[in-house]
Length: 113
Length: 112
Image: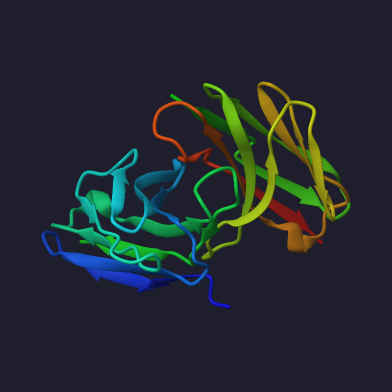
């Protein structure tokens, strides 16, 4: 019973490098989302998806891309990393994105130097 | 724009000392108010969803209540294992559906 799995747990990037944060869920949830968590600012929505093939922007989408080719996977791509993207990233899924509980992954701590 | 403010930012309690955490919110039509618990180095874990003013939900030593402007998370006789950051979030009907707006959390420490 894995739930939401994120990889890697930790990553250090140099400015300008690109990388993909992986997220997979095994609960057959339609709704998936990516958040970043910064001290004193709470969780902020980056991108979300309401189903395979459908994605949309959240509150802070600049510098990030997503795709949703399957129900299970929702990778987050950093196109050209910047120090301002140093943060902890969480992937979440819920049944339909309505008023049902969201399940979160363990997070990826990213440092951009 | 939906907004959530949590207070206090940090709270230290002695074991057994009951208290409340506050979550004030503004939202264009409340679809749901959520409470999550987050342990260090972990993702948030769901606790409660409240839908309308006057609603209450309980789980062990925790009770969540809701008014039209705020929610309280009451902790009765806390234990050290209740130490965590408690997050409040709202989901409204305005803008893009299904987005959660989070507060910055209350870091609770319960001392033995």
